[in-house]
Image (cartoon, rainbow, N blue to C red):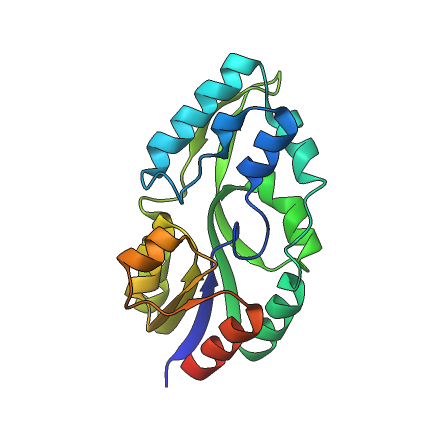
Length: 201
């Protein structure tokens, strides 16, 4: 009998989108663009870093915004209940410098994410992805260790891990993604998502 691991996206599933929150606080509308809009994460991040440099903004300013972000209503309870029935890992394309305060608010779940390259003056000069196609690669690695994965996410960059898993669900995704992938079950409420995970276990 193979063990199950629940694999969750972070932003849009458990916490608000960090870049959207920062866009609103900084008054830079271009930073609202996320992986719901741009499937190529590498392209998206280089574009974001260019905008930050243009406005003279760095890690400190983004971390100040993050310190004010709370988990989505019901997210902590959903996560606690899911963790009580199966091993759970958050697989995110965010960065450890962004994620830590959010993990504290979520009860310190395990997260696999990436890291930023930051200059001494706080400028973000680049980023290091943990591995190529990090979500799909992580799910495949877990499967190679004898686990079955059950995954959920809301964006283009979650589709590969959802499709590669034993069961996978969209959560609070865009109308476009739901229309493009009608075969994927799509949920809007944590109670329904939790029931789907439990059924897949």
